[in-house]
Image (cartoon, rainbow, N blue to C red; front, side):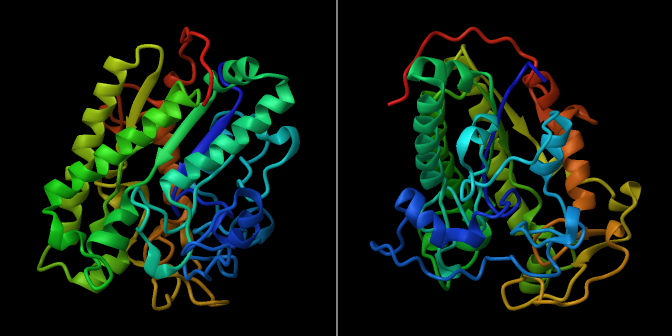
Length: 362
């Protein structure tokens, strides 16, 4: 498709396609370090083993936190890419002109988020990795001006925030954020940092950006088993906190669009998309995952998962099946309900003609 030439992805395990499983390699690429040195810690948030990937082409465990394709995989198909966007860990040569996936399992907006699981690549570090790629693109194309002209045409997807709740605020045995902030205050703190990071991405040349909201984190099998639902279908406290974040994220989209008139930002309402009746979409099981899980809510190694995977909303304790990812991607690309995306969907965003003054990444 000529309306866009590339797709850059920032996020957590919902979009990770192999970065988390190769953090040792990333030390050499980007100087990523943990605890002030280059000896990257092992991480529990790693899924490069069966049964992960059982429904992915070739049946390989690629590091995706699902039985098959992620939402961004399906999006890349809808956008007309011949191949899936490569993870930063393996992105090289002219392939980077088509985009890079920087997403990493356990990553959050806050640097410390997910630390109890081991090494991860936070939002800020992902943007630093993007700067490395921008420099390489400039080398390939010949100069920074041509690099920025290319980057202006790209689609950018940013989806972080879930781990700042489930692997930070709501695990007080590891973090003090819940003692320091109310959920309203915490949402404000997160959005303030998020806003600063997005402005940095804009400075790097991003002009068509989809900001993905936090989903129903209180409805995951892990949340239900860990917290209990008090008679509700889901853990209301987690979902309320997610909505407080999402409301501010939608407001941030308005603010960015008002202030940065040579760019367009949209909000992907994951929470709304997940709020309907699962049975209406063909799902029969929504409160437990398809595989038996270990102590961190991931599938047990080499465990045989359920056979009727298209009927399950969740693959493991946290992550959706390919069946749900496919629906989310389709609705993000072309909104099914008006509330799915704001102020437009991805299919309209990529078609926008935006006049951009020449700028230089710094």
